[in-house]
Length: 208
Image 1 (cartoon, rainbow, N blue to C red):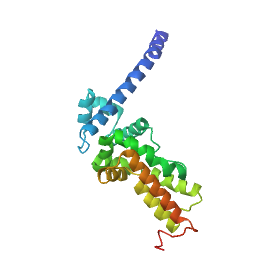
Image 2: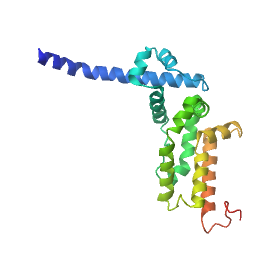
Image 3: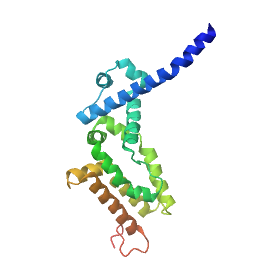
């Protein structure tokens, strides 16, 4: 009897795991759909459950809190966009906006939601520590001390240029595509790096 029960558990486990993964993805895709329809809405767990076609308790079974849902959702979106959000070298950081901003164009509702909604703000705030660490490591790997005055200023401007906010402003105000906006941001980063070199003909930060 016990052997039969054990055999049944082993047989049913892969199927249940697959069903759980499919339900989880359905919930995440429902969140994506809701944000693309209404980027500025404050989405509730009830909204997500209804959109996914599951019970509210099912959503909570997969994500204990709304914060956990959006943490998983942001990872899901980044994987889907195949964007390198945390580069490991300065060269990667400088060129990252080109690909990433093109992906932003394909997910405009979600990206705008990440900028303008409480849930989006919370998502971004939870990535700050890892983002700052990655940027500093990029500068150090290129022998540019992030603690120096020029280093701090350059790093701050890189945070601005490689952001959803920069993409949105260049798109809405300048009328650029995601690719064009990414190229502009990348070019600006290169200009800043040249200006921070000791032998630069003119120093952007010292006003010379």
